[in-house]
Image (cartoon, rainbow, N blue to C red; front, side, top):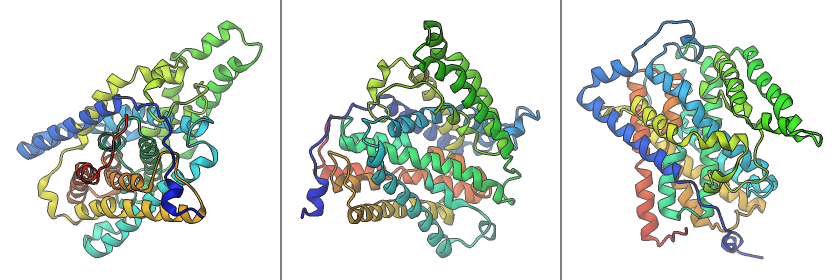
Length: 425
């Protein structure tokens, strides 16, 4: 019988390097957070007036936020394109047969992901029972916030540890993508159940629009192009991007009006859109050579996404250092630094008991590094704050906790260097 370490120590598999765009996104997000933090420190009044300024009281503003402001425009109108990219990567990873996440191979990564979320929730509840005294915290669902991770920041530090061609990055990206999407969806479902925080309700009938857009796109564009008798005109019509943009607007409107997070507004179209026949890995650089509509649309987004993530950091990333005394800062930080890593390691132990091996090229030490990097959270969790926690001190404390969680990245990099973690690629 093989010892556990040998069971996980398999020959490394070649992995297509991850696109350098992710690093650019991370740098843009960090620059936005830094600028916002300076503004909060130097001129907090004008900063908050700017990001919360409502330019319109039109009825449309209440579709995806109680008040239309620069902050909600970024999270509700621009971030959907980011999550289209994110959802695309997850969908293709689970769909393509050559992906290490296809079929039974997805069992262990899924187990690790749900272990991370369970650990975060348990840590939130335990630390809240010990530290939280505010009465208004009783009816919140703040435990949803640490479900989300940060795709671009975890990748930035992960690439410094493993290198761009290491298979550990694929597992890390899968965990962050799934946690983010589940966190957003669960946060949207839980928000109407906290009447003291939001005035929203779930209006599920509106979901007819995204479902109709997806089915309409599939039966009008994608399916006819797959027929053996399809003409060249039919193929060209299916590969055009503009019809999908129109359907995307319909889908976004339905998701936003339903009460779910508008950031997920374009995701329902993913199963319906034509996609490549094979995958190269999550956010693979080689996808730049693919010509299907889904990848062609993704090719147009890298530069706009740099601006979007900078705007996210600028409008949502102002860290008030005075909030260090707020219990929510430490509750959220503990959820990331204690709950998530322990949840992943516990899931890894369960996986070993069930006989589930890690993907080729990974050993347990790699998973330990990944568990530490999963202690970083910002881009998605910071969007969830407005609907998960009361405004004021609790939100500012949670935001600071998220900012402090980013320090896990440099810390894990230093630890990996001292322990001789080798980079590949």
